[in-house]
Each structure stands twice: as structure tokens, then as C-alpha cells.
Length: 233
Image (cartoon, rainbow, N blue to C red):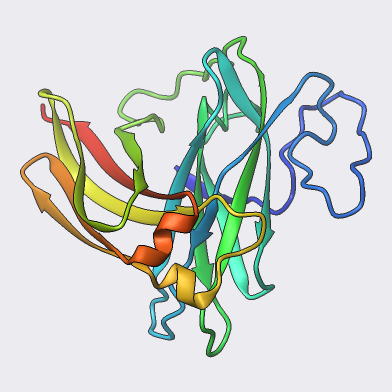
């Protein structure tokens, strides 16, 4: 797996490039058949430590669709956004992407009260991907040793616990949590700070203990917990 820049739309080769209205997201540019889908404003940590803290957020297409284009809106320019893509040739929907995209965001500026990005994906009817050419004996080609399982729920005032587990034949190798706001504009520092969470792991389960202030009741806020799972064999 590798990170590829998400601020440039992933295009299908050979399709006519369209022009999006000024200021609009470009996740469907160049795609003749495309369903756009927008996520929430995802809160990005603004700590100045090195390495910079990152946030991951998974956004999925409707059933039987695959990701064909990506874009992101930023609350400020000093936010670096990429997505996790698969190795393969050609770089293409169904090969580099699947039914969902995992966006990775980090803040690379100076002092900031808050930062956030809103991910966008353009979804295409899924027709399957290409195949890989076998390599020489003794060489392992890249594949998909991990599976990302995500659980997204609405946040309400008070305390709550959200979890996501691997299957019985998997083991947990990593975990992430993210908070997002379905608002027209990026959340203010006050709103972004009205929710917090503590991520822990318990065996093959990722658990986030969420705490939200009363301010959250006026908007639709979500928390997503991701469990990165690998085969237990």
C-alpha cells in the first residue's frame, strides 16, 4: 500500500475531461458516469510535534460502486491530504482503488486553533480490476495483507463507547479514530473541541471512549473507529 496525493482527481484513462463549476469539488471530473459523495469535515490534529500526528477517515461508495475520483476541501492551506492506494498497473479505479477510500490528513503549518478537511469521492459502477503478472519464484508480489474495518456512529452529548473488531480469523495490527462534522462550513475551534476521545485496544478490538459537550447537540457529528486487521495465520 502507498499514499497518493488526493488533491488531484484520480481519472479514468481515455475519458473526456469535464469542467467543474468554480469552487466545486472535482471528484467526478473526467468521469462520464459518476456518483459524487461527500464526507464530514474531519478534524485534523494541530500539534506541532514531530512526527506530525495524522488522522485517517474512510469514505465508502454505494454498493457495487468503486472509487474513481477523489478530492478534498480544506479549512486552510496548511493541511496535507493523501489517500491510501494499492500498488498495481495501470493506476486505475478497481486496481489502485476499491469500494472505499481512506483519506490521511495532517497539519503542517504553525500554530492553529483548529484544522479540518472534507473528503469527496466520485463513485463508478464496479466492473472489477485488472490482474497482476506473476513474478519470479521466491519473490512475493504486493497484495492486501490487511483489511480496514470501520464503524461510524453519530456523537451525542455525554459519554459513549464505540468499537470495531476484527473477525475471528484476524488479528488487530493498528487502530485509528476520527471525529467529523456534517456542517456547511469547517467547524470552529470551539465546536471541534466539544468532542474528544481516547483510543485503546483490547485483543482484536479497537475501542474509542467518547466525551461530548452539550454544544454537539446542535449539529450532526460522527466518530469513526478503524480496525486494521491481518490474518491470524
